[in-house]
Image (tube, rainbow, N blue to C red; front, side, top):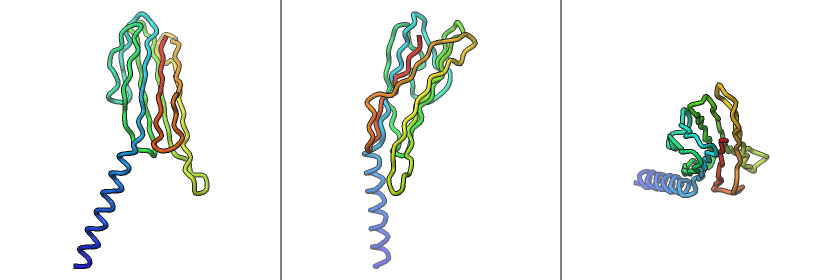
Length: 139
């Protein structure tokens, strides 16, 4: 009976730990701004992002990750051959006994015609949950 009670206590503790981790999941808000007059279309990357964004339109989507890391990747293209590949990430780096969040972003012209692309991270939280906003812009 003692073994059974220990097993129940162990499972209960695990469930509570998982639930606590889920309650503090990292939320990434992805804001994509299309500054051109042309429609841009999603080609590859993180599922759940908008597939089409009209000319002059901003759009936002929220994606949840665990606190240990996040990667948002998206390539958007215009019919004229311009394309931008955007990436935003966070990961935890160990420094002694401390976990330190490290954030990164990039925007690269990736089409057959050169494009102007920018990526910025705003509202970055350096304590759990490590929420942030990735702002991707295509001109």
